[in-house]
Length: 53
Image (cartoon, rainbow, N blue to C red; front, top):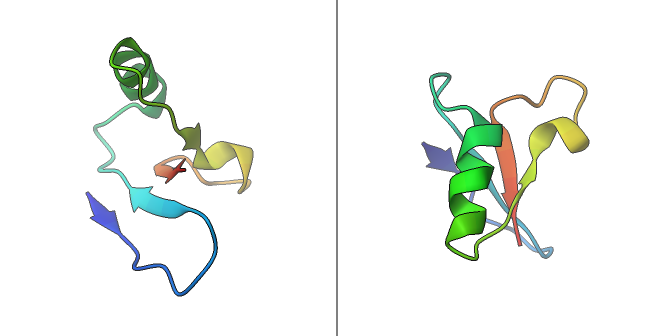
């Protein structure tokens, strides 16, 4: 997993390894009261990127 250091703004972006399914990860995170938005919501090919607020 990698992340970018924000230069400003409100979000932290993480890049997931290809073997991690962001939909499955979201379900696990929600069980622990953590949420994120998949990069597919922001980029046409954003499969492995998530936005954490």
